[in-house]
Image 1 (cartoon, rainbow, N blue to C red):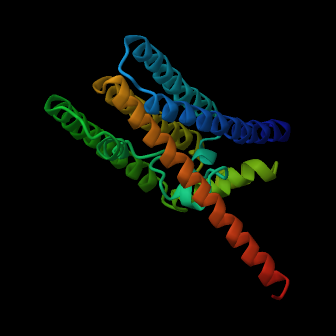
Image 2: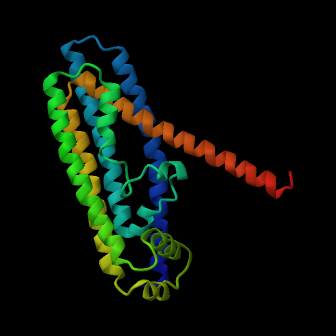
Length: 251
């Protein structure tokens, strides 16, 4: 592949960061709508229809994220494992390039306080099923890591991912890694796809078990957590940058 193609890949990868910034702005707007809908809830059928429409739009918003992420992952799966668009704090929460699906059940418990016994049973069954799939994917990921004798996968993602961004001379790096880079990329893409599918399917099934008002509370909790972690991560990075600047200036 020519150097021009890699520069194009870098441009495409940067486009995901641009997409994410716009997506997060819309995420905050949706969160505001969710909060207002909860505060003005009066149990009328017409309002339940409006809530159903809002819930559908929020789920479609998340689907848009995963579709764009899938395109980015296909272009450069190593960037997905070393996402520069997230702060270190945000990256500390990642499980196979995204949130751990089990977190969904903690958010339901924390945000919804009027679950019926039937709902609790169904949620517990779904939680057990989700945990089993999580373990399977974690084991699959471990096998991929073990298949890369040296360097470890995280280092590989950084080295090859950054090479794709900053230089045209990638062929030598690929040869040093293993010679099986295509197989590795395919394996990583597959596990990311399966993990994202588990994330979206679990969220949709949870919403399917909740009534409209409960769904609003749950989706609000999801949005609040995501935006809060992002803000905290950005604040920490700003503080660290300020400290580095002060240190470099001899303060």
